[in-house]
Image 1 (cartoon, rainbow, N blue to C red):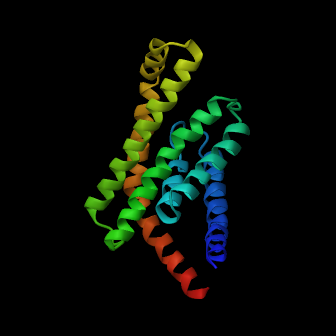
Image 2: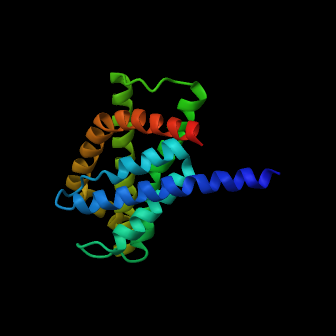
Amino acid sequence: MDYPSKLTLRLSTIAPVALFSSLAVASDYAMLPFAQIKLMDALVFLAGYFYGFYPGMAVAAITWLIYGTFNPLGAAGFPLIAILIVGEMFYAVAGGFLGRKTRQGKESLIMRPSRNLTFGVVGMSCALLYDLWTNAADGFIIWGTLEGAAYRILTGIPFAIVHEAADFIIFFALVPPLIVIIGKLNAMRRVEV
């Protein structure tokens, strides 16, 4: 008897994963002229926040597989695509963790300046981890040494600063109201079913 409930749970995540993945890919293409400024990170985080680690990770993987393969600036081959996917999963893990903590604490989804700041710092921290991971791994693959990894991290600092600042602003300004909106939509969906 337990099997149908697990199957239903899995099927109920397909639509949100598809929706968040398509929004992330579409926003990546739309924001292509703005280097290092992407809504994808926030969308992966939100998927993790509402649907858990694994659906968030699925959104990260699907988004990078599509955007990384069919990128007008050039495709990310293997192993780079795997590095990018793993880096993007930091956002899913953070979203899943915060979403679980919020549900366990029964916290209200009312926006407060401290909550906005928390989300901004989380977004910036995930971007920092993403940038360190992807640059270090890329540098190590290219040069095969830890010095190469360090060199790649150092040369990526200007891009990382833009990425981290953009994620702070997006997570500070957009994620809290999106949490309220998506939370209300999810509550309406549960009532209708």
